[in-house]
Image 1 (cartoon, rainbow over the protein chains, first blue to last red):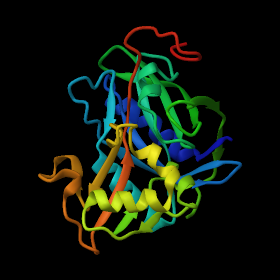
Image 2: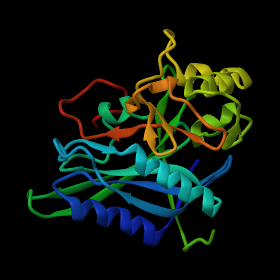
Image 3: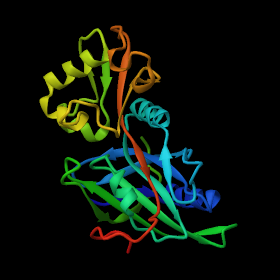
Length: 153
Length: 103
């Protein structure tokens, strides 16, 4: 199941990672899903509450998730995924990402941002679909990213 | 009260994003939800019956864990409960051995 996203939103999530470098960025993807595709229609930048270790951890406040869910509901959309950056690390999911992943059927988009600790440039962006039904059988599957023209709701 | 269901758990509520239940407290509301949709129970609660650590439950805008009466907090029929799994992660601290991880 590919992740379909407008080029402008894809560029925005990568730019977010550059802006917060050397800290991790994070955000929420709103859109629609069917059996074939996850389609992103809106992107919500979120704050990283892990100010104690923002260079290698992220956490989105539940209040921001609830606000995103309300916004999605008003727009006829759902939360279909999340994104975050890996400053100076590969765009691959980590054991921490895996342990903290609980949104089955959603996309987890990761962008590597390399730099000199003062300024970073987005490198590779990968998406992983969280499959399974419980903590016992969950798995991240690599997910193809397809670009789409700006979508309407 | 209305209970808002997050995307991944709608599989267990016949795809309903909002479920209306009766109950005088948060705990009673959650019990009514899992009575109506038994498959939800294991996704919300541990085998010991405690809310799973990554499951956040909000009564309107308040985290139930931080309310004085916690899950025994009283609920009015106009109140809204929101179930929201946590979102967190980060870069690897040390290489791990999970398949496909830390490549």
